[in-house]
Length: 111
Length: 115
Image (cartoon, rainbow over all chains, first blue to last red; front, side):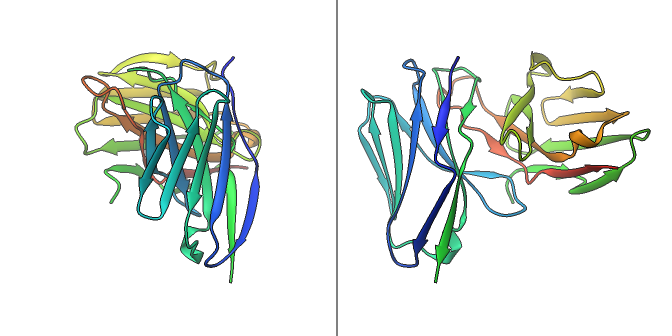
């Protein structure tokens, strides 16, 4: 079945760049998403990328997609303490509702 | 303000109690979802409703009973739960018709503790 994997933990120093990685198995995935969950809150959509794109940039966020290797990454430039959260990678196909989420990566930003 | 509101935010109940979780979305979406988030399984889809019709029941035990009276409201009725049902229950909505991206918008969750 479909599967999305992420490393569970990442620690970085404030001001450094963070790179959160994700791999998925469904080659028919059309949309790939990054969600952020802060403590005690629900998930908030950060960004998404279509499968026919290699890269998407939005302010401090850069998403890279390697469709051949089924690898997605989220780079956060100049990481701040407010970026500490759990980051979920998710994928789905066209018009479908079968979102498959990864286990989430807990990002800790050290002062 | 996320556009998806869940109540209550926290709930403690005994195994013999009956309670309900409520979700309301103000985004004009046509699909609503219940997810369970726990330490064992970070995000587990429970139910999906499209235009008030249930389209997905992900092998959820019958002690969880969903209800979707209209496209804006979703309930999760709880009865005779077990301690292992303690988790964060997240409601989400999406706009699927005419929108292939169809991203999910989540509420802040209801933290349930079963004693």
